[in-house]
Image (cartoon, rainbow over all chains, first blue to last red; front, side, top):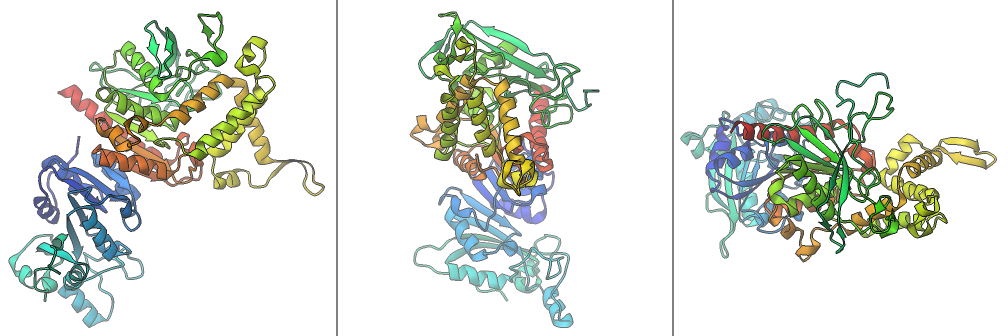
Length: 217
Length: 385
């Protein structure tokens, strides 16, 4: 019995729409399990979350969400290739030690992945750094530079360059604002105005390299 | 004891049941009849949907919670986890705890009388496996009118029984809680068990297992066995924290008659155990541990072993447990994920080694309670439907 939230945060709702019915889903850094609870209740997925935060693990268990205490920087090699249909990682990429390795592992474990992360190229970050000469602190990135779990911040353009380098194909990109809402304007100027991006990833087709999209502004 | 604590089940009375239905054992032998001693805590609901089976470990028994009389110094062995407001909340669950066959606390075992000879079974008592225990526990469930357990729960060898339940009788169990457990013993685990057995065999009072007929008991051997076992249940850090190099008696300067604290502790543990436990039961239990390997019947494929299981699983391991290390629980988790079973796993940071599953470690109890809350809410939903 799953206790799914009655309403899902907008970015998680957008992700849930990208998940096929009945898929086997691995959620890296699943937090308190809201996405998995929703997917289990509404999409009939067979889902598992990896998490290291003790309180969040207990929260998942209390919800009836499968949660495994594993460090995604160290333990992903234990998972067999193609053992899942989809690997999801929401707002965790910036907190892992080896982001490139984690991305590679995601698309080894499943043919498709979904990744979201905060945009360090957002105009407010750029303005903060340009005008104050200090590391940006905002509602999305609330930590001081010396005490933050976010050790690998990047911009959308940086991420797309990395995907290209690792031979990962970007199948989809949605950008949401600070309220986790999509809007057409920020899609056009995403690297400047988008707060959070939701990327759909797949392994490169044989013969093709890099993402289909043009690099972001 | 002055007063029973409010979070205890209080005074409990062990119950006995005798089964005249023959029990076919894995070893080929048949037990024509057997008796079980058990205790229950809490009330079985009208739908009979809230029953939880507690399986004991190597040296455990049916007395898992509460007190036998007002003069009892110590409560049952899992008082930490069973009682009102505890993970196995007796306000919500009907908890059943038994002494397994082969035991020495009232259920049929090597110290019982063999009806064929009129003498104690001793070494002739048939070898018992975890699967046999599951069969016998199912007979107890039938006797109590329990079609399906809300959960089968246990630590160590108890967890193995819970896992075996989900494989052998998948329709009769909704949840497994396996704590400080392993899918099978390692060579090192078996090695320690063998040292313990050899300690018992080499006691001059062992008499090939027929010590009862000689009116003696191999207490020295059993004491040694327990001492070896006890060290493997503790962690290096835990022993250091508890005893360090403190000297209990003697003079370290003169190197005369020295006894370290840890030595006298082990002597005490071994001695008190050897006075309340039967050596043949100890041999039988360690053998059951050694033989446990649910994958064996599935071409050593643990994933296949769990493929027809239907239960959901909670696994809990402890970081300093080197007898059944966290890695062993991860093996189980990985197999369960591949078998598409629901599974959660928490690895609890605690310095107490394997014995941690008996101790009130806050995070362990939180995780266990959170899981059992879910089990209880399903039980209520089932009742409301």
